[in-house]
Image 1 (tube, rainbow, N blue to C red):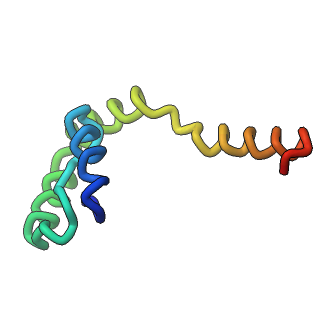
Image 2: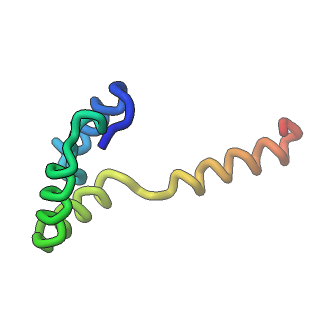
Length: 80
């Protein structure tokens, strides 16, 4: 659920790649649609596993580590 219009584009792309579900802009999403989507995910183990696999292929989950390395490098080089 995107909170701002500019987030919708990324959410759409992530959903197309198969590792997320895009419900659109928050103020336009009904409670019923949210509930239906969550129930579908809870009831569909295979879908959750497929989304997990896709996400792991596309995202290395090391972003925080890279940021920490940049910060430490800046400090060591007297830039921070």
